[in-house]
Length: 227
Image (cartoon, rainbow, N blue to C red):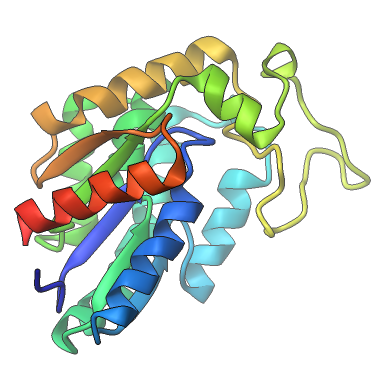
């Protein structure tokens, strides 16, 4: 398995266990003698972090889905130009924490036309798409249980000392995406499950309800098949 110069994304619904698997993937790359570069989406660059603040720090109920999708794609355009392409050229492995796959799930669930997402993604990143996207599949109820978020409170606005603004990152525990209703998160899961049939790059959907070790074993198998 050769991961040099490969762009690998881990994605999935909230509470799917992305952070745990990303750390295991980094360790795998290091132990194999490679170098990894972390690419967080949205954000990952100074410009992208400013966009991230708008997206995750405010109540998105007031934002048009087109505006939301365009902001995500703007962050990705900067991430690819500043981080991803230079890392590929240097033979490093890019470990992505979400990417355009997330827009195919979240923004389509919010009302953005599905047939426009891929075209918009091509405009933002050109031909720099992940070599493999791994989706960790969990029901939203399981994700909420893992994150400690009460689904009965989903959709309510969280007030702070600064009105609707949340702390810039450290990713606020209940961010703008998590505050949306349970039905929204069910649509997100369905969109992730359907991703292999619509995405222009390889996607593997893995059962994320198992223990972390079993999930990572499945990720390794997917990497072996791809590379």
